[in-house]
Image (tube, rainbow, N blue to C red; front, side):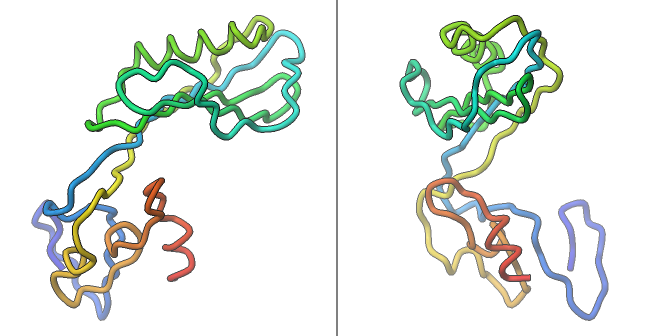
Length: 159
């Protein structure tokens, strides 16, 4: 198998799980910026909020999710379904700050931030993921959730 860098892998079997999508497949993107907060007092959130779409719908379909880790730690993430993979970091941080203020959470410190962009195939054919007999798993094999683009569970099940 030849990698994009030109490096050649030699083995009895190489399973391609790089996650790239064929160029013929149209893509949207799930972009996100999450901030893990530590609060000076209990935040009061006892259950996760998976998708709060009551936030302003700017530059695509947006939602916030909230995952309580402890009584004083939360992960708050701004997620957007967008046409481009770039994350508008300034806008996402502002959206999270507005959300936190609206929730009237106590004083907080950002202890960690995560930023990412996941491809969302919007069409094409399954055959485009399999141009040859190279074994594949995950996104590279066309095995992904059609709404989220998540491929880990399918990759684990395949393995």
